[in-house]
Image 1 (cartoon, rainbow, N blue to C red):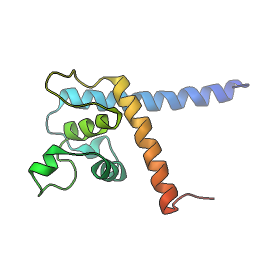
Image 2 (cartoon, helix red, strand yellow):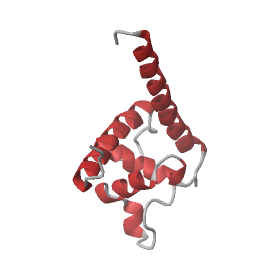
Image 3 (spheres, one colour):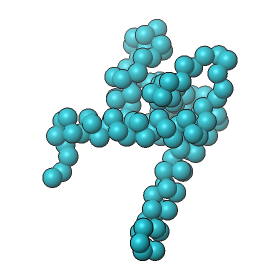
Image 4 (cartoon, one colour):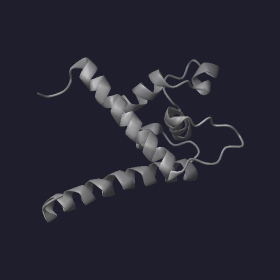
Length: 119
């Protein structure tokens, strides 16, 4: 961070990341039946499906993936230990931020494992 240009680029990246976290939090609160593709890429949905346990997909095997945004965010939160009990509070921005950073690490590992990384 020795130059102002680097600082501006870092702040721009934080703004984008903060917007994405806030957007996902507000979608979780505002909509009941939004599609998870509004806030997640298809690869993120696929990885969440493979890594976390979904009670919805176990109860309804005809659904592949997450039918709603709320269930996708709950599965995302389970990456950091969220239990999704009825007495648990709503997902906060902090929880989603931690889980998104973990999901990003999982994505990087996936890319490295499949050798989809540019040299």
